[in-house]
Amino acid sequence: MAPHPLIEKFRHAGQGQVFAFFDRLTPAAQTHLLAETAEIDLAEVAHLTRTLLAPGATAGVNLAGLTPAPYELRPEHGGDAAAWAQAKAAGEAALRVGRVAVFTVAGGQGTRLGYDGPKGTFPVTPLKRKPLFQVFAEKIHAAGVRYGRPLHWFIMTSHQNHAATEAFFAEHKFFGLDPARVHFFRQGRMPAVDFAGRILLETPGTLALSPDGHGGSLRALERSGALDLMAREGIDTLSYFQVDNPLVRCVDPAFIGWHLQRGSQMSSKMVPKAYPEEKLGHFCVQGGRLVVVEYSDLPMALQRETDAGGRLRYLAGSIAIHVLDREFIRHVARGEGMALPFHRADKKIPTVDAAGQPVKPAAANGVKFELFVFDALPFAKNPLVIETRRADDFSPVKNAEGVDSPQTCRDDQIRQFVRWLQAGGAAVETDATGLPSATLEVSPLFGYDEDSFAEAWKKRSPRPAVSDGLYLV
Ligand code: UTP
Image (cartoon, rainbow, N blue to C red; front, side, top):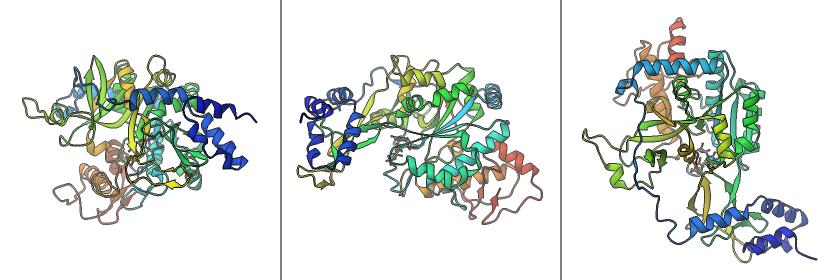
């Protein structure tokens, strides 16, 4: 019998090894492997092998003509307070007419945290141990009430965590949101290859496939029909954030307003880097375009460079919070003269040996290919970076311990609640870092940002004493 045309095609492309055990598989497993291989764009893999795996391809990014990017300073750092107020009003107006939707990328593998389950189900709040998804759901619900328009929420999952994510929401009755406004879709996958560009098997009957990076979200938004749904609903603006950051303002009127008033197709928030070695990407300008240069790609000498005032020159750190225009996403997704580039990540990729036995490599044995969402910035018209206060927007849970861990994130949430309470006149003793001895929590349904908290606190009567275990809802 002639081999299956797909098998022929793979052999012809020098990728016949993925069918090395084909004859030993059950008919069902053969069908499964054929379906997986049908997903692979062999020309793309060949192109990536040529461009990213060839000797010298790791020589580093081109830094020619790189300069730090300008950004809109916050008023307390000299920014124009009237312009910020105007932006906020414009953002609120957009929210009131329903032009904005929320988008969470939740397809990552969360390897560093090492938590069993989709990262969005990780219990993150200090007192009630609410999962990340619940924190966002409640913020989104409260913002919908505040602006009189319930928001649509798009959640990008991966093949690995899609079913578990949907089941989690169903089990928790969508945390009070209307299920018709919560939309899940899977991101794409890419095959992992060895250092010679040969596609790896994970088992004798399955390919080593992994999510195509958060930049895959743009094509997934288009492919899933999310952009069409937005168009039908009159939504032209998408507020983007990552699943691991419970501090984020899911919709920030000032940010949305800046974006809209400038006619920007993609806007980003920055925080001033806390120290030169901090692992954030850097907003830069190159050849007249806004780019993000990763911390691993910017030489340490540049990261340490200071200006005449002693401040870091490359100060603007990216915290992966963006606002995007719907039709811009469509153009990028379709690759209309603006395809995102893949990046290579050398990883330990579980695979099989020549006998089909499992191999758990001790060192990197291959490469995964990923797209990054910030690579869309150079293609955007009027791209914009605005400053935000880290304490109001950014405390991710990346690692099990140490920096950016559940502990640091818990403390940052409590510090934020304390600042809101103190601004409302409550007496709260704290240490020098702003942390009280009491563990307390504010439900996003009570207040989800400075303004909504202040309004709710003003109305609360009688006001509870701030003590250990206080939960404001
Ligand atoms: P990270 O870069 O922190 O990766 O993702 P990760 O997979 O969550 O964690 P590690 O590196 O394995 O420990 C940043 C954000 O981008 C999303 C993640 O879910 C997170 O919200 N992401 C990342 C995707 O949605 N898809 C991807 O393919 C990669």
